Image (cartoon, rainbow, N blue to C red; front, side, top):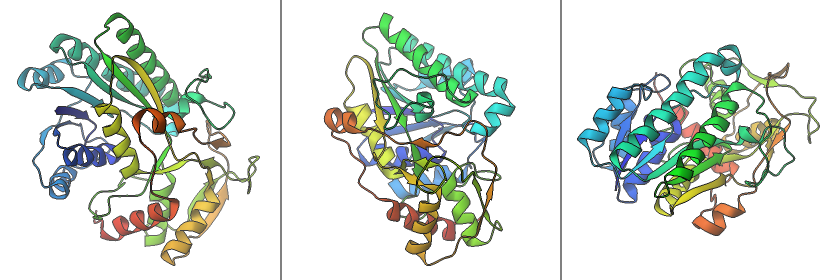
Length: 331
């Protein structure tokens, strides 16, 4: 199949492009490079050993998106393109609502116009809000704790409403948890522009000496050691989950958690990184971040049952692969 991957130069998107090509699909990438780099396109092709087509566009641009659909026979869309920093979304809500919601509407309108009936959406565990863990797909969604999460809830609703009146449209909504790790080649990994928003690249940059110390946001949560608990999933497992969702799509809307089903605290991850790589990671405790919750991990049994997908790589593998990428990475 010819698959349009929006945000395909980014962290999760780039790994998914590789997984798609390894599964025999052709990839067209649309990305405005706001949180990724052009050289990622070359690295994707180097790792996969195949060519990709790249459009540097903003997916909110109706005419630019239409041109892609007009020029190629698109069989499916995997939609990653979106702003994703929780803290920034609180500071700049309008920017997040416009970019994340309008992009979803532009893409679904193009799919309807050109008869594209496979759509995989990159959602997030943030839609569960402060529900009781483990999070299950059948839970009522609580009001999200930040505008980023709200944009995911709204996009899910848009896709559901459109699918309800377009019975041939097949939508898979993937609510995934905390991606970490990197491709085993060491060429592709998480390389955010500026200070990282995710924990693992923050840890690796401290380990490399690029940052002085890790800031741990709060140690007074009701958890095993007071620090926040998250379900860290290897990014390659996550990428393979997107391929499984795309290839197993049937008519209607299908929602899946992609996670390991196991929670790991911030300090547990730091200790795992130190143990795996033999490197000390200095840290300091600072105030909680607005919008963060104490604990977040998945019930991933539905994805296993319906897609035949499970996470295979553990936290130590995430630490190994992240550090390998960081050591290889040059600004």
